[in-house]
Image 1 (cartoon, one colour):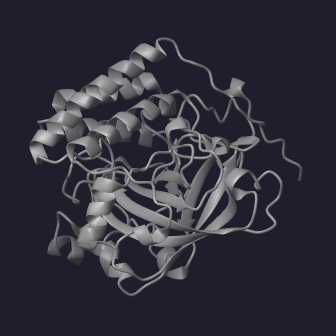
Image 2 (cartoon, one colour):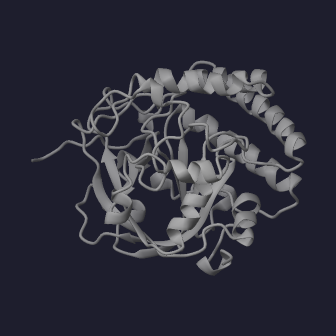
Image 3 (cartoon, rainbow, N blue to C red):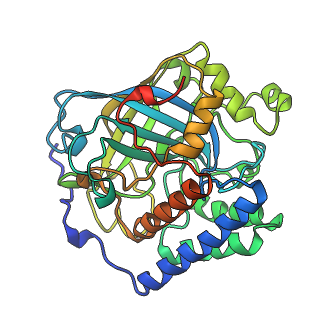
Length: 367
């Protein structure tokens, strides 16, 4: 069946009223919070996804003979790339793993030729994918993002901070159907959540996909991680180390096992039902299913050596705008995040006196 996928043009993005002023306010608030976090830890951390649960090397194999609408940009030709993967928790602080929150899976693809979107990194040989185990951005517009950032700054030293985050997630959860087709259960927030290696991860916001517009997802493919999908965390492992059990679970799994995931693209078929400028709107799969484009293989390895932890936390940066122009993020929530990522990364590297390195080969990731 022929499908009319929406073609990309510069007109799909629409600048919002007061966008420049709101963007400036977000960056200024975030910078103040970053300084508070530095004083708390005497170490600069990421303003989001601060807690690292594992850093791994793997291979991303682009599938051969993809149809024209999928054979775009990085995915135009069959090729295998080395990658660095970082699992994380969403808050911009180091929290106990007992608190339920979004989890992240960031992927840095190495060996990607071609001029990159960011002028200051145009000659880099990497492309980043930043994915979260939730299909939407709860604060899907710059206005909502600014409101949430103000709450973070207001409640930064109080228990109300986590309550504010939970409320945001609860509101978003009412909009989202989980992968079983049921509405998200508000009672799940505040619990440790499902197994992070069995979760499905999403770009949440739209990206340019060559001549088209898409969202990206990655899901378990090999039997061992597919069996973890939707599975709750092992209560015994939580009891053994309640603050850090996620890191322990990843380390224990990859000490002996290999995992395979499949990367997919969901192309926009209706710009009204699948908007670019509101990241809180879920693109429903009955309107456009995710279609496989690549396979990610992660072999057995030490996922949390001291050398890797320092390299991931202090040296590497992951930025969705670190990409080929054919895959740049879209929408006002991502336009403001472009400013946020740069400000946060610059501050973190400066305060930790660490260079910001874009790898040119996988051997730069320590064992």
